[in-house]
Length: 273
Length: 287
Image (cartoon, rainbow over the protein chains, first blue to last red):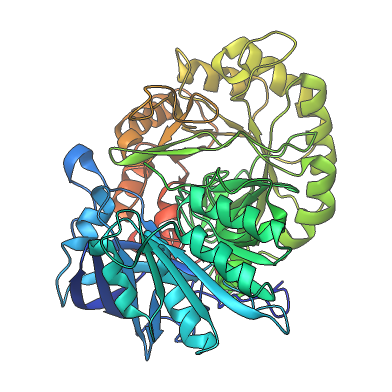
């Protein structure tokens, strides 16, 4: 069943409880840490988990959230998972209310993560906003030769850059941290200077589409981590499909990391409502 | 021990069609999912004669205590199913129920005949929640249309036939009676309730398919009433479903006269929901 060498660590076939150890504010974002003693210790960078809470998941405004929410782990170290998120709706609002000692319900790791860079190329990691999260553990694995290019709306969001090792290059929309530029401006400069690269990108659909087009222009392989609203995360609901050159694929089992070459466009991703 | 149309099952907990993909689950969870399989019988996603891509995204909308899906029956078609999926589904440790949908009676007949001749298939479920392209009527919304469909396919197989009833009918109990009289061996209900959602900023339909089906705890009270109204008028077994998330919910459907229950949307939240619900009912695990 399992395709050889694919970056997929299998998940236990049940929802389980991880125990929250800390919830930290990091500028505009939250970072939840939880001890996952019931899950595998080696999720692949770029895989994801379906998260909810043991208590009070539902019953909020409009009786939501109901479904779990998909998040790539930022890091997994000695059984402790960390997830970076921004409060944008009832699910993330509830996750932000978690306190140490409470239960984080999860299913995972799920999906296919990042694949190694093409031989002889330098890995260039490109993150936009909350899309920087799955690049953290990938940088840890790739080591210091990876180039980090990060884009944020503002300095408050750019605080996430402090989680990375070394000094990533940062751009912000308003110039309040790093350069006032788009992260794709940084990528163009990087590829102009050194086009022998493999690009790994995660961020909003508009950014991913710009990355995809840039990489095609420079004939550089690109791996893009997409997002799509999901009900289950393990192929049951067929709700998270994205169009590719081969037709619709379920992002949860065939992604979330896809080769840029498989896509006609990265604009059609996007989370739920 | 439960018996469904002469097929012995280790317990009464099934999955709703299209709410658990046993093949994808093996990719995500490995063979651990077979070692403690969550259901006492497995219902396949609906297959159609021709392969289908399904509806354009977005396909999901979360509602208060539930969701609307507009998936559009993506599947590999009959030949793809028989050649690619059936050998894998045959490895499941429980009886297999294949769900089929035809857009005409001829299509339905082909699907029933071809799936019914395979040893791996224990029962066949007829998904009649679609328009008949010849009449324009939704087969399952009308007693006479449902009867015509069942009468057409009944002689084509010796497999038990389950008719999946739609709640989007004036009188689901009348449709159930018509199915029974036409030779159905069981009925299952409810399918999803028709619904829609508007995108927050544009006020245009959110779902790529414009409308979709509502499921989850939001529909449970409606489902329970429809199941009871059906069990009071038919003698054949009834498979009850609609928002079941706990053993207590499942017990309500059994108390309303259902022989089996099916877990649907709750599988999305917990792939082991079927195991948990069976345990809460005091039923053994499937394996």
